[in-house]
Image (cartoon, rainbow over all chains, first blue to last red; front, side):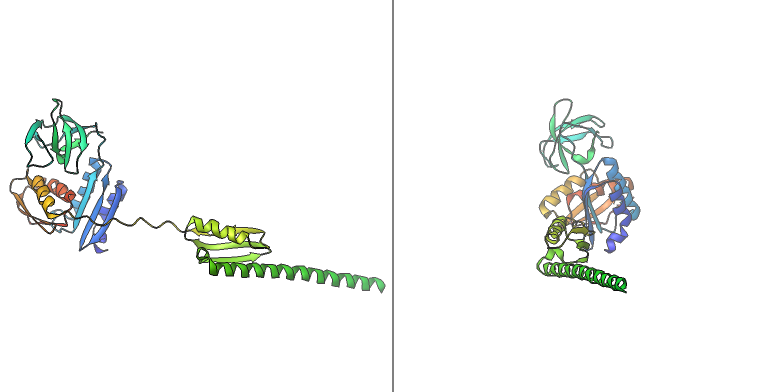
Length: 140
Length: 167
């Protein structure tokens, strides 16, 4: 329970912002937090709370697997890269050939959420393929 | 004199009648209580429940394990001869929380691939994966650190050892 005390503020934040299916377990001196955030802002808030307690993420005693709730297929997302284009690949993985690119800040259609890392998208030009989910912000 | 005797006689008779009534009531309550006690031995749903009886009115207090136990016990007590009413002041215990799902740790092969995907856009960062533990080396800008961590944490690692130099 020691870790749950150490990260009490983080766990309280998780409850306050309404993380769905929240699971908190302590195992081998690591605190595992799983759940689904209602939106990207809630996930950021949770991470900011974590960063406050462990600013350099050095302790290595938390694994926080919290994803944003799966977007409804057909909904839209903004390409949220820093500045570059987002690669669209044939399959989910960076070892897959690039089949197209989506421009920074462009809007794409979410076809399906293949897994937490890779989403199948379609651009305005009709290019379809897998893009890294971290660079996609679902539009509400 | 005759009048006094009759008065006395009436008083005695009332006394006897009321005491019979009183005792019979008391007897009934006692037998109800005994019946409840014997039910308690047979029904595990009734363990933890205490009962009191007053003139055929049974008052139950304590805590049931669940709502089914509550209706079962009430029906059972109502069925005892002589019970006029059951006042159930018991609470029902809240359902136990769902068992927590076990922690899922990714196997090294898919984890290595996923980690490689995640650090691809962070030049200067290298990672090794062993027994589910991800060890990060190299250097990173502070502004990028949280973003990288956010993607690594969703890959189901056992733990993340951050040995990055933060610039």
